[in-house]
Length: 442
Length: 95
Image 1 (cartoon, each protein chain N blue to C red):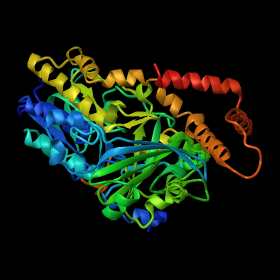
Image 2: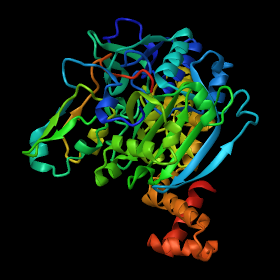
Image 3: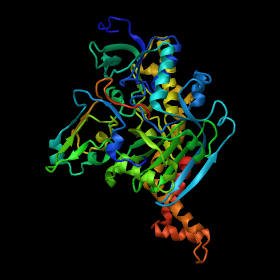
Image 4: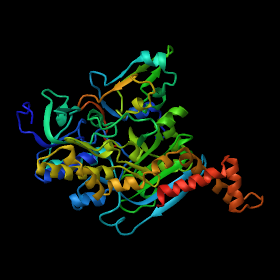
């Protein structure tokens, strides 16, 4: 170490106490390492927003058995809908599962409120021995002969030294850029989510969504629900509130000159959505960026003395059927911790030693999932899947079910007429079918 | 009520305002080099206002720290931002 480190350095400094950071800190601390967990918010979760469904129950169960019995979870997701929308119509795929692993332990997904859930998870890392320091912004990395040896925090005497830095500082990761591992983003690579938590009586939630006990729903919407902006919308049930929001690709919002909160009002006013939110009262409005482009926006994941995990590494799977971030954040945080633990044991925290991160990401199915779905983000974020097909489906169904005294048309001529109406070329359709298959089938 | 104005939405969010702004807008660039003014539309907190002379008026106090303005801005150097000091800025309670 350099002469500047008067006190013993930490083994691991984790930047950001979201699901990636807290998981990394927890596992590192359990391995007996000296761990510092830094968070810029007043408390962990104060800056964090997602839908939020946490699909990482089985992963967390490995670390904290029966974690849901002590954690602040809202409802267990046993019903999922994907709805295709025109301005007046919704055609939904309705999935309800009371089966094993969905309605029984370890459960498939829970709705959570991030300020509560993230705070609880960080407390678990603390209980495992990590030292949590909140209200602390990390401004830069510290280097010694080019190697990263610590972080500079915005406090007096703010130089803190550590053998391995794990950057879990979120989608805007300043640290990944300071370390020279990430470039600036393009507006088409990110989506903006705006969200509301709307209070509603639990009895009304149960009746309205046909739920028993603590079961919950996760509804997702595509098509006209974001007007002509590429994106979608979501509505989830919490214990005594709904979480709902609209997601729009930043470049698309700019092109269409749409204000995100106006899209949100449009979503709530849609005839298929309005009855679901009726009578609710706004509790909190929020917004967050989502790294939606998968591998295309992934930084270099490690360098001498530093690893990147979670949203900071672009580990957010936005691939139509999937809208998952917290689980990959946690998995990548754990993979980073496993890498750091082995590196500290070896006494070698060079890039070469930390390159084992790739192997750990593979074992935890992070890199393999993102590789398998590498074609999905570009396809699902394209204009036709986000807006055109959902609306085509919704409008076709309007025609299919319409009884107005005129001759019934069979599906094929009906689709043909709709495709003509939407000015779709057959070649385009075949290309899209191929791309969809490549994105999801093999 | 369920349908709300933007002002009503913002009233539900808690901010601890730092003494110094964490976002700096170089209005010269907005005035001379930018005709899009994307920040005015995309900001979820509606913090950017286009002035008659083409410049941009900005208020940092009720910022979500989401980074959208910076990503959407098509003029290099027009928007510079960093995180507010530790413990300051937006503090979500429910989201």
